[in-house]
Length: 271
Picture (tube, one colour):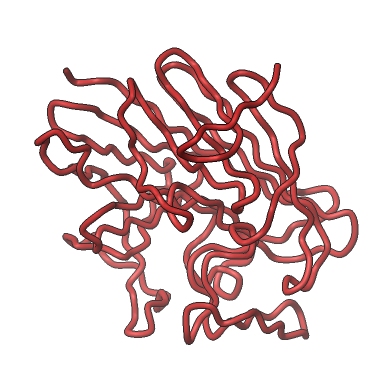
């Protein structure tokens, strides 16, 4: 099997039924495009699509985290915090591709203070996409996070209605004025949101474009950030821990215990 390049979004193109997925390994191994029956679901542009968040998710307070007795400083790319990891900013290497599946890797490096390897795989079917990410080390153990930041179009055009977001969460991480969780869990509040929610039974969020398409975002992880404060798109972000989790809820990656996370988007047309 060979890979292809589209003229609209260069990258690795996967197909299954009427679903078309384009992954851009040179641009942070993000999903640049997802078309169902010719309809684009993701906001277009080099910053958008759906990008991996690794080796941390969301904001890390002041760009600092502690590992034992050591304090590490990350680049402050969303002052005063460090945001969304480094994986979205680097080129990933292909590790195999077929008509409907592909895998990519990149090696952790400066400014991340630990050595390791990240692998991301994509499996496309006519009615679903499953993305899996793993973070491994062959040396020192280290805290890490992983997740995804998709930008779903708020409106699919052709005079259709805006997307509706539905989910049931056990709690909401209270957000402080610094946009970091305070450590308190509160009852879920109505939107608009730039907030992290807890789902102990696994992430399950439904996006419905009335009369057009229904898409479910599911994952075995229990944290999801929902962001709907922009006019063009909404974000549903499964992740392995809450924002600032390198400090508040670190997940240790060891040589015998990698960090692994997956998410599935499944869809059905409503026409």
